[in-house]
Length: 65
Image (cartoon, rainbow, N blue to C red):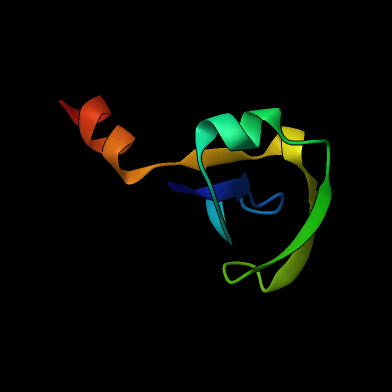
């Protein structure tokens, strides 16, 4: 299980949406729209599922190897 991430449109940095999902469930989900408050630029960003990805901690460990 990972966290759904988006990119802050103002800074380009990855931010968490605080929503959890696994890759397969997220990939198969219907197109949806959501809002997330960004603690970096202190604004609320609107985003579509196509603009997001699932960040799973175990994957980062594998990529670093």
